[in-house]
Amino acid sequence: MASEMKVLHCITGLNRGGAEAMLLKLVSRLPALDCACRVISLLEPGPLASPLRDMGVAVDSLHMRRGMPDPRALLRLRSLMLRWRPDVVQTWLYHADLMGLMAARFAGNVPVVWNLRCTAMDPSNLSSLLVRRACATLSGHAAGVAANSHAGLAYHRALGYRPRRQWVLPNGFDLQAFAPNRKRRTAMRRHWGVPADQPVIGMAARRDLLKDHASLLRAFAAVLGEFPDALLVLCGDGMEPGQSALDAGIREAGVADRVRLLGPLENMADFMNGLDVFCLSSKAEGFPNVLGEAMACGVPCVATDVGDVRRVLDSVGTVVRPGDHAAMARAVIGLLRMSSAQRRAAGQAGRERMESKYHLDAVVQSYMKMYRDVAFA
Image (cartoon, rainbow, N blue to C red):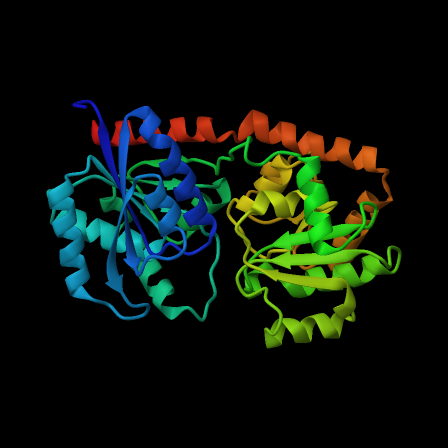
């Protein structure tokens, strides 16, 4: 239709991650608001390309290789912009921010909005550090930046980002897909081979030093002192058995027989429903998707005070200092000492906070308003 808006989403890759998950959710809802979407991955398409295509969204790849700049990819991106003629280009992650801005400048100055997701990165990742520095220098040339957390926006401003316009658009959650579900809980626990009353603690995060699994393992060792039958389940990329560094950390903590490594999972709602307590031990975050997913499923949460975690949890969860495994252990033990009814009530408070502040439909409406503001400025 003539009034339909066209938004081109440009992202570094389509592997599993917080940015990729939010892109998938956003693109699933925008067509209902007369917004057509197309997605371009700088790298070869990852596993999230299939669900996008299943929705009828065109997914293109520039076929870049990680760590290898390719000027031809910039020309391909410019050519696609000229053919599709988007009203707005939305970029996700630093390399896509830089590439999208440069291509749009040569494609008729299409307005570009950067989506900022991080509050820290591995200092050994030299390529990303250099690209981020370039983005800070060029940030005034983008139409604006949208951060998923107040902490993330402040962090980038401290790095020298000086956008013309800025928005904080939090992660949104599908509260039908992520909801307390006793059948899912029963099925998940049967799959894990644990009885209904056995305490199960979980975390969903890729293997990364910033996720600080070492602190979580030390906290769990202390929990076992009071709840020796407790189980810790870990999922995410790199959470497969046989990862030498992870296995060594588990042995060092003395919890090898009480930890289950699940690897990456497709259905996070099933995982969350199987838990009694969700933990997040990160040293840095913006707005962690997994925290919102656990809250939406009615799981009581203990998380480190990083990024916007305190703002998201408000008074419905426990916040501890990063690296303070003793405090995390005390918080988990406190929740496990509760009756199941008391834990359900604590989890329901988190669910209600998701309903009032972070419903996906409201977040998508905010994105749509931003696109209109940028396109018709």
